[in-house]
Image (cartoon, rainbow, N blue to C red; front, side, top):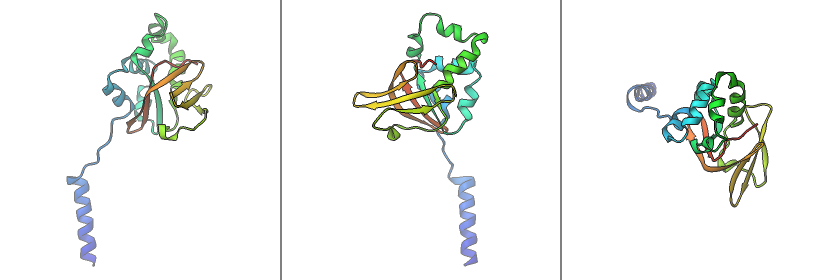
Length: 164
């Protein structure tokens, strides 16, 4: 019996070391980069000093505005936000898009509900109806694609930049 247990242990260790490999999805930043429609969001996260946190923080949800959503802001807004002197404002906007937990579409409630964001001064309201899911702060965005999985959380693609 001891020999059988020893053989099982050796086999398990061998598979872990040489045979089977564990495969992980990309993190939030890598996933967003691979999609290709979040160049502005990633540039903003880098300028705000948040890209590393989005890569390494576990169990987060990101409501990710597309490049088109950023382009819909008034002319010059993005360029202004990317200036070093506006870093605090940029951080406030970007952290409004991040929940400190994973929230998938399967967890949505039948009625509007409020969620805490990493911008501790703000909460979002999430509403799921027959016509779709919306996320609201001082303005509203529609979720256009949900549940893009990453190894440290989930991304929901939205069509507008949420503002504090």
